Length: 194
Image (tube, rainbow, N blue to C red; front, side, top):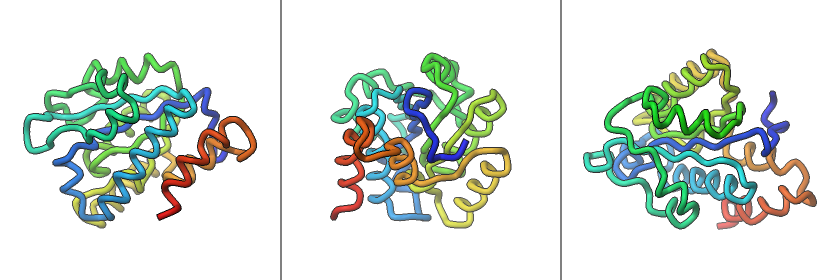
């Protein structure tokens, strides 16, 4: 299904490991832009009443805490985030896999830090389990550009749609005069107006 046809009522947003430490490891893209894009996806999920699943890994280690902005945007989801104890593939964590299944949605918008670790493995697993996965490349990154490119190519070969934050937001809006479009105008505006 092309990204422009993403129906909000059939879609969930999964944000993986946007933690202070892990985000500092990204060298393939601008970290502030990456973070702003991830936050925009969370805002869009809330604006459109789409399920939002947050997860973090080993917050008491070098990965650090989940970005505090998520708590302001989605306090309930932040409090309920899946705190993994070390599983590299978030889908290998039973609580995360159950949270994804509990959304009842088969379309998953996925962004993680880093793309070559946090995003690639759960994406491949979700595809194997029959989900349609949209990987938001610019809401994640990797330690370097070659690693990022390799991860994005692997996910695309496996069947994931590789997309961008603005493509997802505008695809969900469909029409700026619709209720979804009106709800997303401020979210898109924050990204494009400095």
